[in-house]
Every structure is written in structure tokens, then in C-alpha cells.
Image (cartoon, rainbow, N blue to C red):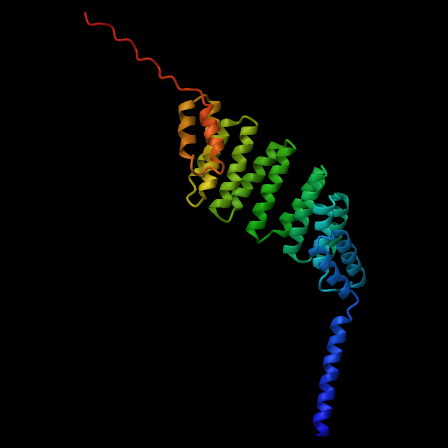
Amino acid sequence: MRRILVLILLAATVFAVAACSSSGSPGREDIERARDSYSKGFYLEAEKDYERYLQVEPQGKFRKEAWDRLAEIAVSIKGDLDRAVVLLEAMYLELGDDPDTAWKIMFQLGEVYSELGNNPKAIECFEKCLIHAQGNPEHTYKTQLRMARLYRNMGSYDLVAGTLENCADSAADDEAKARCLYELAQSYTFISSWSQASKTLDSLLRLKHISDETRALAIFLQADIAENDRDYAKTRELLESILHTYPNPKVVETRLANLPEVVPEPLPLVPPRQ
């Protein structure tokens, strides 16, 4: 009987210690309160508690969650991009040892710098993304695609072409390759390099395993090229072929309605027989 009582007391002590260790974490209340406030839309209160959690829990297991939420509140809720830069750079210093996490942080930081109009810093972030993306074709493809669009906004079309060619070469599947080629063809049209755009689209449409939507986007761009060449019959033929596969059929219908009518050339006059 005495032995049973001792065992009961020992078990009670173990449970009490476990309860104290789990609830006695310095930032436990902060993280729980932050989550509750965030779920209810009280973002400023959540922000304060996430910050407090980071201060009191230097080795806490929820630190990534706190950093993520703080960055999200800064960007999406408060629109405070300067604060977002500070948060993401600090987050990168702490969590950048993991390639996947480092890529995500740097990609987000690149987007923030781009929104701030600081293109050199944005490019620097995306270059770091490429380093962290080694061995991950999906991350490499997304980074190169984003860098190319940024170069295009900067007017650096030589860098656009080089980046998108690398993007297509390193793509893991036909769909990713097609997206890179589509962006390349579109970029060529922006500088009126119509023949290069047409060749790129031909390469894209030879790919077998691409979605109907991607194929339709490429054909729509072919129609733009044909219309620029004033080949309205070909333009109409291309547009009609994607009436049911283009993401926004109304756009195709409007283009068709506004196309000039193709007037057939008159037959040559045959001189009467003598």
C-alpha cells in the first residue's frame, strides 16, 4: 500500500513538473495572445505580442512564425515597406542557414525592394535567391522569371533575353519552359523585334506537354504579330482557334469584332478570245 502511494506521488510530481515546464516558458503567453489577436484581426496587438515573444524567447521554437507574421503585418496590413526591409533582413540573418527558408525570405525582400523602387537592391536579393535555389528547379525558374520582369521594367532587354534563355534551358518541365519562352517572346514584341518573337513562339508551340491556357496565350501573341504585319486573315484564324481556350474569351471576341474586314482581291481580267 505504501509503495502504491509513493508511486502515485511520484507520478503526480512528474506531471506537475511537465505542466510547469510547458506553461512556464517566458513567451508562451505572448505567442498565444498574439495568435488570438491575429485570428481576430487585431493586428497591432498581435504585432506587439509577436515582438515581445522574439525578445523573451531567443531560442523559442515559434520564432519563425513570429517573424513571418511581423513581416506580413508590415507589408500587407500596414504597408510599411521600410519596416518590412528591416524585419526581413533580421529574419534572414537568423534563419538563413536553411536554403528553402533563405530563398523565401530573399524572394520576399526582393519584392519589397522592387515596390520601393530600389531595383539594384531587388536584383541583389534575387541573385542571392539563385544561390539558395541550387538543386531546386522550381525556385530557380521562379527567380529567373521574376528577375527578367524586373530587368524588363528597367529597360535592360539584353539582360532580359539572357535571363529568360537560361530560364528556359534550366526549366524542369515543358510548362515551366513555355512560361520562360512566352515571357521572352513578349519582351521581343516590346522592342518591336517581331521576327525574334515569332521564332520564340514557334519553339514554345512545339513543346508537347503544356497547358491549354499557355498555348492560347502564345497563339494570342502570334495574332498580335500577324496583326502588326497587317495579315488580318491570319490574325482572324489564330484568334478564332482560341475562342474557347483563352483565359478571357471576351477579349478575343472584342479583337475579332474590331479587326478590319478582309476584302478579297479582284480576279485578274481575262482578255476575250479573238
